[in-house]
Image (cartoon, rainbow, N blue to C red):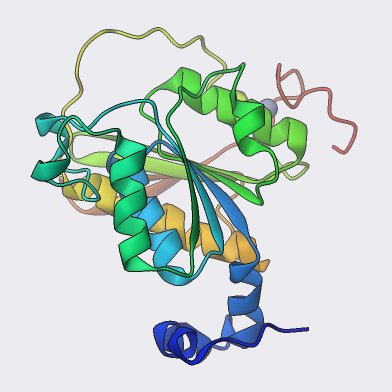
Length: 251
Ligand SMILES: [Zn+2]
C-alpha cells in the first residue's frame, strides 16, 4: 500500500509527485529506501543534500574527518562555523534542517575493507563520495558481496567521472581499476563546481536505480571535462578474472 503522505510532504515533493516516472508510488518507494553516503566531502555534500531533499527515507553518512578551511571551496554542506567539527555531525545538522522527514545515521569512522560491509548492511544503494581508491574499492567489494548497487564518482581539477555498478549486471569497480591503491601523497586540485556536477549526476542515477528506472549508466564510464564542457563515454567490460566479482555464480 502506498504511504499516506502528510500535507507538508505532498507540498515538499510536489514537483516529483507530478512526474510520471516518480509519482506517489515512486515517492513512497524513495521514503522506504536507505542509502549509504560514503564520505561527506565535495561529492558527498551534494549526494547527501540531494538524497535528503528528494525524499530518500534513511541516510547513513560515514566520514572520519573533521571540517578544514581548505574544504570550503567545494564541500558545500559545511560552513566556516563548522571548522574542526566532525564532518558527519556538520552534515547531519544541515540535513535535518533541510528535511526533517529524512532519518539520518551519522557515523564518524574510516571506510576500509574491514568496515565497509558493516556500513553497507541494510542499505539499498551505496554512493561513493570518498576521496581515495582504497575506500572506493572497499565499498565496491561490500556492494558486490551484499548484492547492492554502487555508484562511483571521482573528481580532479576541471574534470570528473562516474559509473553505476549493478551486481550481476556487468563489471564492478575492481574490473575497471584492478591496480593497487598507491597514495601519491600529493594534494589534487579541484574546482568547487566540479564535484557539484559529478555529485548531481550520481544523484540522478541514484534515484533511477532506487526506482528501478531504465537508462542506468552501467557498463559505461562517463567522463566530464569542464575545460571545454564535454562528456565522453568509455565502455567498461566485466573482467572474468576480477578478484572481487570474478567468481560470482550469477554471471
Ligand atoms: Zn569486478
